[in-house]
Image 1: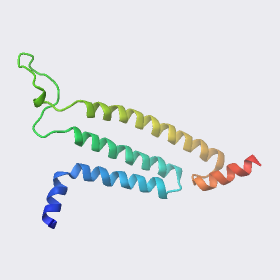
Image 2: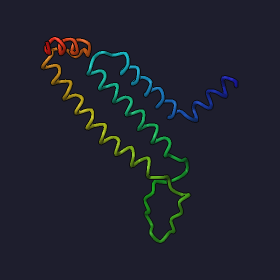
Image 3: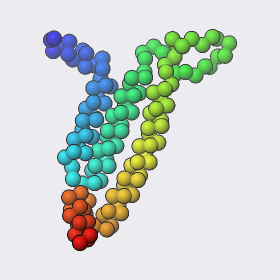
Image 4: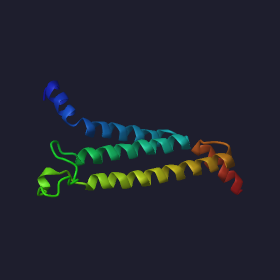
Length: 131
């Protein structure tokens, strides 16, 4: 494959490529950061990547949203996109916001108790307080 072919294929699948890059950035933040706040933000990046992927997978060029404006015109399935990915994304956003709020609240409580956001320090101080 030539570079031009690769770039053309990449531009055709730009949303998929962007979602993969966004997911990898979030995954790297989850693995390499020891800060709990940064881990919660990285999880948000991963959530956004999944939402972008589902949205781009559900979109079909030339089709319309499944909203019937004129009931006298017969509805044909080949004219509309599937509403399932949009429903999954909306449900995922609600779950993601709830999880982020819970994660930030838990992070705040851990900070108040252990005066650190570093997971290693929190674990070390928690073990010391058990003894």
